[in-house]
Picture 1 (cartoon, rainbow, N blue to C red):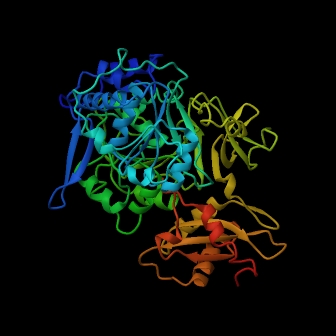
Picture 2: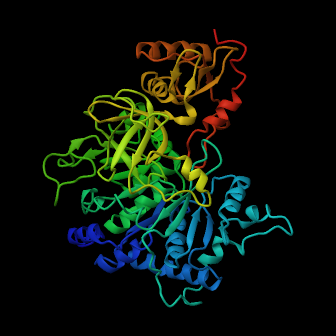
Picture 3: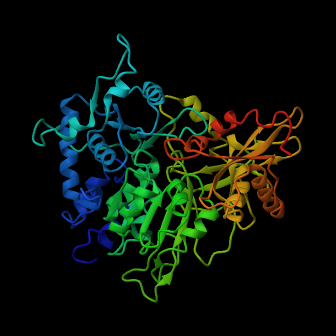
Length: 570
């Protein structure tokens, strides 16, 4: 490695792969003990100066440990003890990471809450968790939801109080950092809430590390590599990348704002070679004039959560450049890359969830790849078995649609305070991912829908995601993004598919009937079910999204419930 690179030597990374004590509760401690580059900038944040220019600030491993200990002293002094959940209701970026490190070093359980979650929803969620305390950027909002005489957490404090705490004030426990047992819970991660009330997924010490060991030698980590993480760090995806990059020593900038207008100038200043995000940012980066300068050095885009759409992927992989040896998923050649630099980048589309523990399926797209709509590829090595099941938990034949299920040591121990909910996702020894899929004879899996979003017409079952693929890729001059939902049709017709579309800024069409005709021509050509109607989203309110940027299809179904009940669109 280069002299100034914080990337851990290969011998160190190989040691991490084999250590049975390493896990989600102590990964910083391992990096501090084994990475010789303790003072090289590693984790970055940014701000805008008085002229609006981006300035970067890098924190070394040693600085991260100092801030962790400062925060831990405050928590310990204020009575936080092992096993107690503490809510972090603060803005995304570096701060949730620092609080996570402090609380886990005490054996407490950070309950990470996306700051975009509405206050009333957050209050219900925290009551379910039973938090001992709440740290919030503005505690007045959540504090005001507790009426006099109601039980409330022991403390509800502003995050600024902990940041301002004297680093030398207060004590730490005698045995610090805390040593977790393999099955101890180290964090609570809430679901997006796109299909209902957010669920509280448990993350355990070893469970959350299992399956990620191979990334120590199979994740791009050349001296020049830099990762921009747009993942919410209150989500398992963001936490997973944090764990990986700190152990690797991979320079990483975390951002609180995922919108293109905020992201693009930061990309230009940081010059990342990799970008990790949910689809929400990729949709914006792929729209309109492409961010050629910002993405000049990007060789890999990482997506996780729901699968991304090909119409967006194909534009992104036209950007950036690839080292000549970058030929396999997660893999760079040892030493400096050899051969000519290749134009364009690759997009690694990972299907995963907090419950799965990581992305368990992966599909790689490059400028040379053929289109293969909704393919999420093969399961990763840690998966003991992936299957498509029927209602009774039996395997269905290849090519038959069913419930996607996995047997894997990466799966969550379950939902916090809700064993009945946990049991409802278990079937015949598998964990049900909540997705509808099919497998082809070559072993590749295809993600067709979330189980809650399947459209049941009078004569067919329709899956929304393949329809969305066609609208975004084959109506690209019209549609920037869309969501297809099933709404009630006239009596006896079951549900009918309706598309809510966000138009391109320069779309030549805007009339819903003309858009419907254009969309249905492409859907018919692809052999797919046609739409009954198109609704144009004129504002953000017309295209509602949850805390992680996912479209809230349940809200769209409610909003358009009466749109077609009197008869299908002409």
